[in-house]
Image (tube, rainbow, N blue to C red):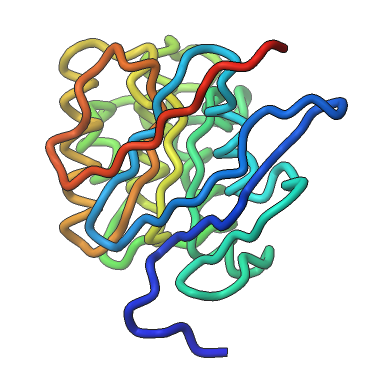
Length: 213
């Protein structure tokens, strides 16, 4: 099935999730078009991380529908269209930084014209190519994870608290990356507690209400 030309990159209709029969979020309706970001705000327990994991296909929604580029979000489509950055950097500690990125590019593909060395330089990690991932600080691991996002050809980024463990320079780096992703016709969902300003891009807002755990 061909997606309509005007279809948003991501759309959710009546999306809901419960844990042990207790509602976590929803029902939610929202869209994210190419060239814009959706800023998902809410306190701890509001379901921000759970929402992104549902959108990424790591958890199954209890109700509703997810559309990617106008088509039902089957696993094969999500694998091509979505790149997910969670709280953990998804790095193997025994592998070097370069080995980690090359391995992930082998699984997820690579943005045309991008090399791992240039991606590492862009995130301030040039010179760490041969360093084992286990020796990196939390902020350095986050930067390597951001390099992985930049190398991904996926048009839709799901970024769960991307500013965590970063200094002011790292926060500006995230904002520059999001801006570049949107200029290239992509989109991003960004979760935040509200402690950081939204990236300077066209932004929709989605506020999740904290529920009792």
